[in-house]
Amino acid sequence: MIDKMSYDRSITMFSPDGRLLQVEYAKKTVKQGSTAIGIMCKDGVVLVADKRVASKLMIPESVEKVFDVDDHVVLTAAGIIPDARVLVDRAQVKSQQHRVTYDSPIDVLSIVKEICDLKQICTQSGGLRPFGVSLLIAGVENDGSPKLYLTEPYGLYFQYKAVVIGEGEQEITEVLQKKYRASISVKEGLSLAVNSLKEYLQGDFSIDRVDAVIVKSDGKKHLSSADLKTYLK
Image (cartoon, rainbow, N blue to C red; front, side, top):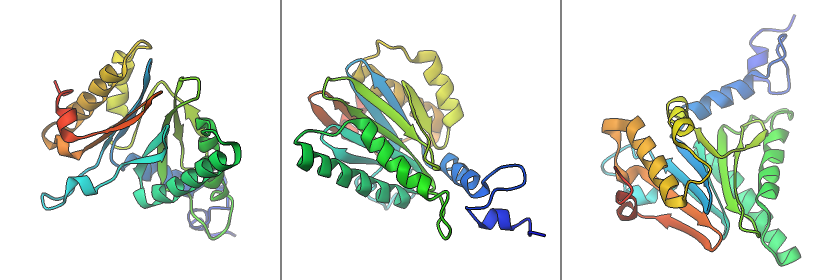
C-alpha cells in the first residue's frame, strides 16, 4: 500500500481523488504572496504591485516587483519571486530571439505560452516542483491593442480585463468588479489600482512600497513614488 504522504512528496503522482497536491500547495503559496493588480484600459495596460518592504532600513527602490520583458511587454508576480526571475529570464530570451529572427516585436500571447510550457513541464517531471508563482503579463500588440494575461503555477493561462493575485485577491477583486469599466483610461486605471491597494493595506500602506508601470502603444513607463502620489485619493 502506498503511504498517504507519498502523494504530498511526488509531483508525478495523483492522489486517489485525482489531485496533484504539490500543485495545490503552489497555489496556496501564491495567495500568501504580496499583492499584484493588472488593469486593461482603452489606451494601454496598468500593473501595480506591492513590494512589501519588510524593514525601514531597506532601500525600497532596490526591491523589484515589476519586470521588463521587452519594450512593449512587462510582468509582475505573486508568490516566490526568485521563481519569477527564472521565468522572466526565459521570457526575455524568447523575446530577443523573436526580434533577431523576424525583426519584429513578439506578440504577448507567445510570451505567455512560452512561460506556461515551462511551468507545465514541472508538473509532470520527477525530481522537480511546480513554480510557486503566478504572473500577470501585460503588453501592447503591434496594432495598439492592450493585452493582460494571468498564468497559474501549473501552466494554465487566462486573459483578463482586470485581475488580482496574491494577498487580498478576494477583497480587491470585489472592488474591481464594482468600479471597472471598458472605457477606463490608463490614468483612471492607475488611480483605481493604487487606491484599491491602499484601501486593502490600510495602516500598512506606504507609497514607497508600490511598484507600478504603464504600457501604451508608444512605450512603457515605470512610475516613481512622486508620480504615484498624484493618483492617491
